[in-house]
Length: 506
Image 1 (cartoon, helix red, strand yellow):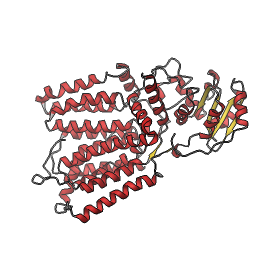
Image 2 (image 1 turned 120 degrees about the vertical axis):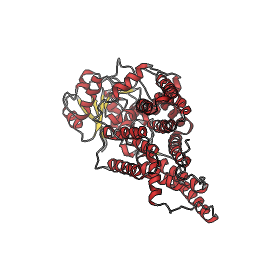
Image 3 (image 1 turned 90 degrees about the vertical axis):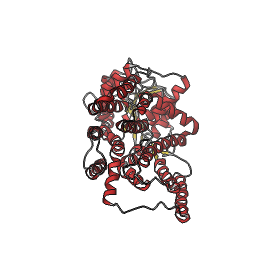
Image 4 (image 1 turned 180 degrees about the vertical axis):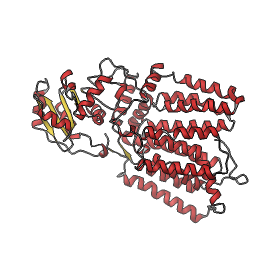
């Protein structure tokens, strides 16, 4: 980590380890609460498939309208890690993996603040305030994005060190990019940041090109070390700006919202820090911060990237401004038995709360996504094989429980598996617009599972040849009467008693 003693040039950092333990326990308590993302079932299944076959599967076996489309799985390595965690400990294994990644990312940022002589309590407050989106949004679910947050953190710290003329750390970037490109498509943001930083840095430091260009060129070359070669890079570049109107997190951030509030808080603290800071303002770092500050206006899912950038690029200025306004306010680092005992007691309480709040076992809650558990149980009990038209958010849940025996019309893999034509047909079906039944007519669709009281629910009730075999408050299962599985599914449905649905993954 870089060393900048400008804030406290005559004072060494003192560690209050009992307080640090308390902070770690509190962070674990926050991170341990987990909800299932709609794609988690798929990520896990695809990772288990790779472990079983010992190869990266490039032809999809879980959808019936993806014929002829290569499967570019840009998260294959992350999925293997998910599968390993699941194999080792089921849902607790996944939660522990997510928690470790969160602790590692937040811990690196916190250690960075300590290394530049920010008081450990001030550092904790800055992380909490400027990184609010990390706690409230990112680490609630288990997704490959958790690796992007770690890699972005390391990348920005390396850039900071290079701005301090410590160029040797740039040689770590090729390794970071090599891992990143095989774990998550967020590597495109990382490469974009490097491509902005390098010419900007050379512009202000003309004699440093020999030290800065070679490792960045090697980092760009590392992008090609993936199962798909240049095809993965062109795919990611092509899909970066593809509109995703059906996915809320890909929509631009709304200022008057919780996301907007967190953005304004982080941006306000950053600007205030810059105005009142006594530290040197590096123009290249300011440029990077300005560029990344635009990201949430493109898609609100990028708010977390902005939070990380604000912490690393602006956190020292916020700390400097704090000292300027409160120069005489000192937080005691006394190691008194009473204080340390209190911290340790609170740490134990946090640990116990973590287990109590999760009913003595770590679980992944799935209530938030309202999955069609009863209908899927019916299909599993019937043991039929066929093609199922369904909702976007349900695709990978169905794949986990019924695939590849039941193949789906759409799932969260989007353009990595489906052609543009197939994708649009599936979306028209979901929303009940235009040629909404094209996917039923042009493919051998046997069954349809849709949301209760949705537009397509009402349309299917009016469509000749399609009947309802099961419905509850969440979903409705329609059957094509001409399907070869019709008689079997009808018999199963006639004697089906829906089981009690647990509210936890899987």
